[in-house]
Image (cartoon, rainbow, N blue to C red):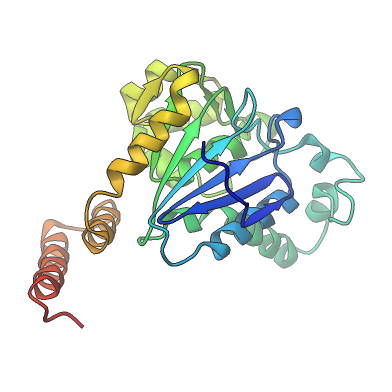
Length: 264
């Protein structure tokens, strides 16, 4: 990858920007890029730090694993230094717990912005919060050694970092329930077959494949991509065809007016 001065480099997250392409790299390979509240805040900060010129964001990770999920230290009585432990949160006021989880979820939401196309390059383990972070992106390129798993239910919890909606959209309700309830691994072949992965490549080709996909995404005019992404997002929840037809007409009208110089 091109060596660039990072826009952000803290708490296991590094952001670099090259013109209209940004790269977010998880940089704590010794802990298999395990996640923490500080890590989530850094991801939020990365999203806020993106220049307006950025059109595509590639999310990648150093080391053998994309992310092994939540750092188990969160479940110890002491938790993380300077942070409320999950034990204390569970015993605290319900409103405070809800607000804290909402704050954590922000790290997983900005990837869906319509002005960006986000690509996760995933190798090795993507467990729990790691799986949900990959699901937060629009597209996923995975290595042949990828192992997705949603382990929250096995721990007596639920996936709460915005992963349930994209998982069901990609693989369907029944398979999503089975994946979450059993906590089993989903390997590369199944990931590609069920739609979790757009592309499977050898591990040594992962970064190059993600970069090639990013370059292809940058070929189309930006506003056309933005309008198309918004239409596809609406299509997933459209109540009927007429609603989607109306949205398509409005979007195409904006594009045509823009192309002939009559746009706002």
